[in-house]
Amino acid sequence: MVSIQEKIFQLDALVSQVDDWKANGQKIVFTNGCFDLIHRGHLDYLSKAKGLGNKLILGLNSDNSVKRLKGEERPINDQLSRAELIASLYFVDAVVIFEEDTPARLISSVVPNILVKGGDYEVKEIVGYDTVTQNGGEVLTIPFLDGFSSTNLIEKIKKL
Image (cartoon, rainbow, N blue to C red):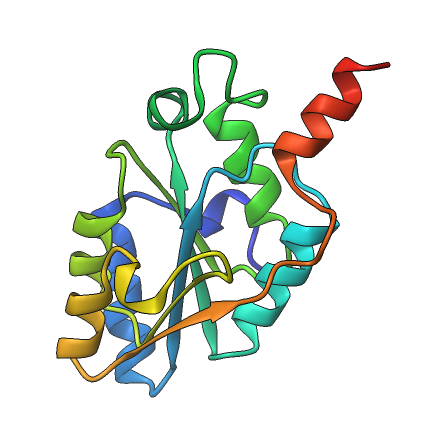
């Protein structure tokens, strides 16, 4: 059994692990995001992402990256807490934290077989589209579960 901490990688160790998985014929799925307050929509999305391949890698925005993207009040949970929570999900095989605003460098390093994002993205606009498709991979979207978002959850909590 793999521990939670063993599923949280530095980029160089992740690349080595991905090379091993690919050498063993595993199909690698990659997604990314902030995953600040985990809710049912996240679980639905991530379980469907895992269903697209054999190994699911999640690129997690660092605290600084989340602040730049979502504002000074975010994230609610720090990056280590978010990483451990995501890594505890049985359908997530690896978590890697990235500092940049986009996961472009991470995707170029991992070169997944499948890159997936939520249904609010246009496939050709997804960061990493060119890298993945030029290497024979697919870029897909998964529809969101209606009514679930971290922003909505935060607003609901503020009203209590």
